[in-house]
Image (spheres, helix red, strand yellow):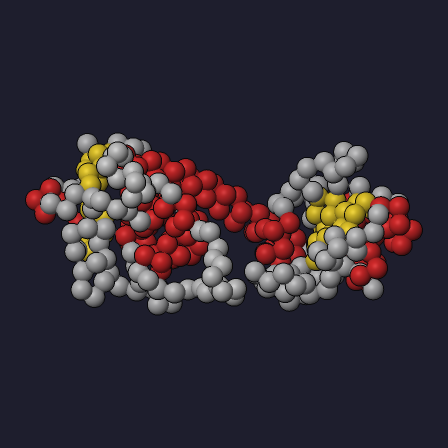
Length: 304
């Protein structure tokens, strides 16, 4: 059986996710050993976050040695998760595109924090986003538990959690990339590129759709089917205003202000669309019971 060696005592998100990646790759057919004993480290088939050696060919993935283990082009230094993912991510995902996406969206953030490399800051003093580091940190025993809890068992619990996260993220990323390709095709085939209309089966969701169309300059709205039944309608369609950029909660052209937050009866009178049911009070989106109704709303909004 393969041996995965990492350091003992406290653990961080990078070594947890590095070991989780290897366990998935090896179908859990590996023994995890937590130690700093150099003689035991030498026996490892994979050595993660310990040993002061980075040698991809020998499966040695530490970054604590003098000079570290290199940096990405954007300056983010590699930690153990990024090093393991760099070698094995594509093999685990079965797709280079999926592996690159997870490297960008997950591995880089984990590696940055482990190396003390700041990639974000709070806009409100002393208020911070609860992130994956906080989640993994819940598996570490508190100072009151140290004498009553086996920290190696807690590490393996955290690894099991990280394995579930990675499996979900790989599946979701594959599906999202497929959706993005289809959305781009819809954009390319649209005559009026200000308004993109998706089909009945194109249930990609508002966030994926909007984030894909942000890459193009023209789209103002997208019409898409909602992925669950809405109110009393068997199906529901939504008109979504496209964000100015990813992570920005402002829109290129918000839905008309006189629609926002109205009860459905007043909204019908205001728009003339009989199956309109809702318009968000910040101009993000509105709902109709039919595709035709949603398209009519979108065209009215374009001319407003």
